[in-house]
Image 1 (cartoon, helix red, strand yellow):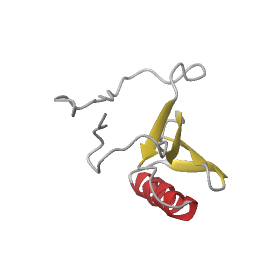
Image 2 (cartoon, rainbow, N blue to C red):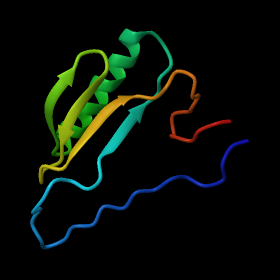
Image 3 (tube, rainbow, N blue to C red):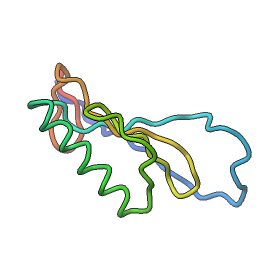
Image 4 (tube, helix red, strand yellow):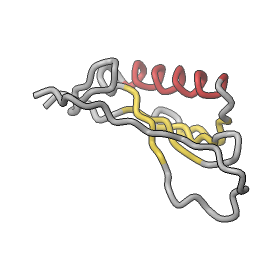
Amino acid sequence: MVPTWQPRLSILKVPERKTAKNRLHLDIRVPGHGSPEERWARIRAESERLIRAGGNALKEFDGHHILMADPEGNEFCVGAASRETPSNTDGTIHS
């Protein structure tokens, strides 16, 4: 069954500066199929896309994930989805 909805995330700009540690940590997942090298290549490609959009790579955990931050310092990770969770390129999960 394919869900009829797509998860969405809205990010709003607020005037207040960050005053404490993030209360929310996001993980961005790329498709998990293929060899470890193919998954790592997709992780690197997504992190490079996010850097071009204004993000910063903070630390690479080689072959597993990349810790990143948005321009305000909010941290998130880019990694691969589980190989057991098939998904298509538009992010929908098939069950």
